[in-house]
Each structure stands twice: as structure tokens, then as C-alpha cells.
Length: 131
Image 1 (spheres, rainbow, N blue to C red):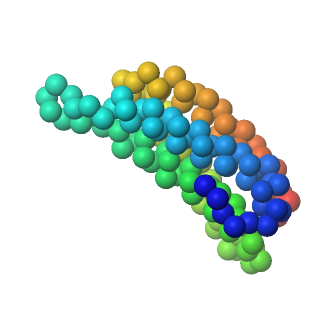
Image 2 (tube, rainbow, N blue to C red):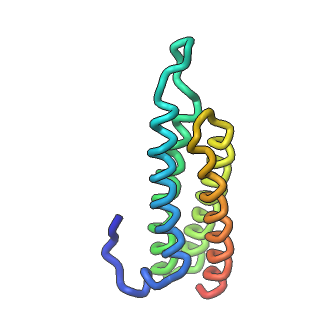
């Protein structure tokens, strides 16, 4: 994934962690999707397959929200981007917990992603104080 950015954004630790989360969530999603794409014995699909797409979509939205918050001059609008980041990380974390209940060997990698999300939250809280 490549955004046209000034070097300022790519130097931010919170942005770097968001990019790490994107790569990790895509890799985990690909691995899980292969295991969960088969139909159950009754012909139904595994309900956890949808969460694999959700973690990719939510993680992909982290970086643009960081950029938008950095570029915003109005504090009220900046706060909306920060709230969006909070919602995204909360949903991402809960979808990881749901996927850990899936019947896949890839679920063993989800605690790694949750650990990265915890690190991201700490970086985000520190970064918010600098805005």
C-alpha cells in the first residue's frame, strides 16, 4: 500500500505501526480464508469467514484516519478522526477475538495481531497528546 505522503507522516511511529498492522492483518486474513472457505457438512459456510475481510478493511482504514487527523486544522474535526480511530481499533480487536474461536490453524496468529493493536493504542494515545 502506498500513499503519496510527505516524509512527516511516514516518520510517525503511530503511522508505521498502522502500516505494520495492515500487512499483518492481510497475511492472517489470507491464511484464515484458505481454512474457512470450505463449506460445512450441512452445506453452510463458516460464519467466521466474514471477519477475515473485516479485519483487513478496518486495518486499512487506520492509516488514512491518522493522515486526516494530522492534516485537520479544526480541533472538532480532528477529534472526529481520533474517535474513528478508536472505533476502528476496538472493532479490529473484537474481530480478532471472534476469529480466535474459528476452526483454523491460523487463529494462533491472532494474538500477535492483538498485541500489535495494544502497541498501536499506546502509540496513538501518546500521539494524540502531540496534536
